Picture 1 (cartoon, one colour):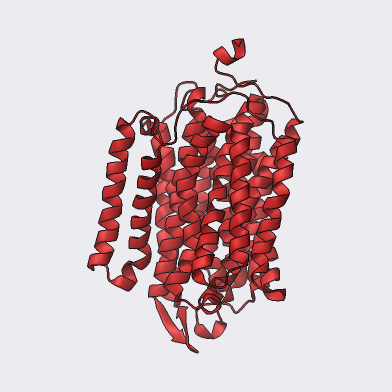
Picture 2 (picture 1 turned 90 degrees about the vertical axis):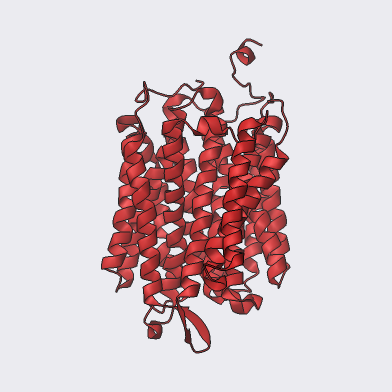
Length: 479
C-alpha cells in the first residue's frame, strides 16, 4: 500500500529488463512497418485495385488517420485496463486487419483492413510508458530512443522485404506477412512484458474520440482532394472549414468534460506545446520521404521524373535510413544524458532541413537520394529520441504517459497530413505516359519545398523550447 500511496505501480512479475525492451521494440517495429507496407506498390495500386490514384492514396492515408485517433484512445485504455493488455489488443487488431486485407481484392476491403492495421501505432507510446515503469533512470533515455526510433526503422528496413514479396509473390502476401509478424508478437509480449496490477479508474471519452476522428478526416479530405475538387469548391471548403470547426468544438469540449480523451491543459505548457507542434513538422518530414523517394526512384527514366529502378532496388536505396536510426539510438540516449534533449532535438531538425535542401540542389543521381535519405534517418533518430524526454522533463511524473501519448498523436497528424499532401501534389501535377498518370519533376520539387518548410518550422520551434527548472537533471521517474 505504501508504494501505491506514493503513485508507483507494482508489477506482478519482473522479466529481465532487456527482454522487456526488446519485446516492446519488436511491437514498435511491427507498428511502423504498417505505415510503409504498401509503399513499394504505390505506383501500381490503381491498377491492382481498379481505382483512381486519388482513391488509392487513401490506402496509405487511412492507416495514418486511424493511427492518429487510436493513439490517445489506446493510452487512455492502457491507464484504465493495463498497458500490456491494450498492447496485446492492438496487436490483435493488426492481425485481424492484415487477414481482411489479404483476402480482399477491392479497395473497400483494403481500406477496412488498412484502418485496423493503423490502430497498432498506439503500442509505441504505450511501450514508452511501460519502460518508464520498469527501467531505472540511467537506462531510460537509451530505451526511449530505441522505442522512438522504431517509428522510422520498421518502415524503412521493412521495405526491401515488402518489395521482394511484391516482386516474387502475389501482392497479398504482404498482408500475410504482416499477420504473421503480429501473431508472433502476441506470445512474445505475454512472456516478456510485466502486467500492471493497478488501474486508473475512469471512462473512455467516446464523444471526444468521435470529434477527433471527424475533425482530422475533414482536414485530410481538404488537403488530399482539394486539387481534384477545386480549392474553391463547396466540397473542398466544407471539408476544410468543417474539420477546423469540429476540432475547435472538440477542444472546447475537452477543456470542460470531467474525463477528457486528452488533457489539453497539460498540452498548453510551453515546452510541451512547442514540442508537440514541432512533432507535426517532424512527422510530416519523415513520411514525405516515404511517399516521394520510392516513387521518384521507381518511375521510368523516360518520363524525366524518375530513375527507372525496380521495387527491390528502390527499397534497398531507402532501407539504410532505418538501419541508421537503429544504430544511432544508443548514441541518441548518450547525447540526451550528456547535452540534454533540446540540443539533440535542434540537431535532428536541422539535419532534416539540410537533407531536403540537398534534394533540391542535387537529385540527378541515385546516390543523391541515398545520401539525403541517410541524413533524414539521422535527423529523425535524434528528434524522435529527444521529444519524449523533453516532455518527461517538463511535466510531473504522474502525467508523462498522457503527455507522451499526446506527442505521438501530433506526430501521427504530421505523417497522415504528409501522406495526403504529397499524394495530392503528385496526383495534381501529373501528365500522361503510356496511358498512366505520372508525376512531373516539378511535382517532386514542390514536395521537397513543402517538406523543407515543415522541417524549418520544427527547427525554429526547437530553438524556442524553454529550459525548465532542473531540466538538465534526470526526470522524476521510479528507480
